[in-house]
Amino acid sequence: MKCIDAIEGTAKSILVEFMKIYERDGLDDTEFVRNIKAVLDGVDEFVRQNMEIVEDPQTVNKVLYEFSKTRWLENLQKIRADTAESIRQTQTQEAENDGYDEYYFDYIYSHGMYPR
Image 1: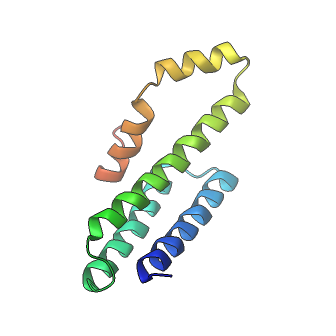
Image 2: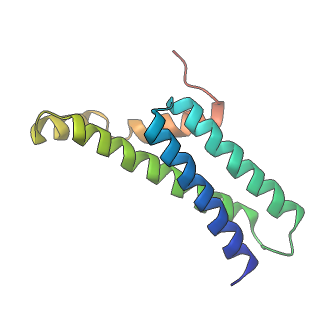
């Protein structure tokens, strides 16, 4: 196993544990995304300080970011499906939220919070 695979695998395990806590305890989206950013920032700092491990630190960050965002979006869809009264209502919600959920995650990640 390459060092970068170990770093990525460890980071993904940490991110999965954060997701479990988020799901179980019903954490606020902002709190969750900020925790994810802290993990990704820590990994980014480590790989930049140890350039012999990875040639392109941005790739690692992008992979972990997409992994986290995808897991969050999947959880959000699951919550909506569990609470939807019918399949039709779920489809309507998805159409209404087309792209918004990704924007929401990206905004919190970039700015630390979403304006109220």
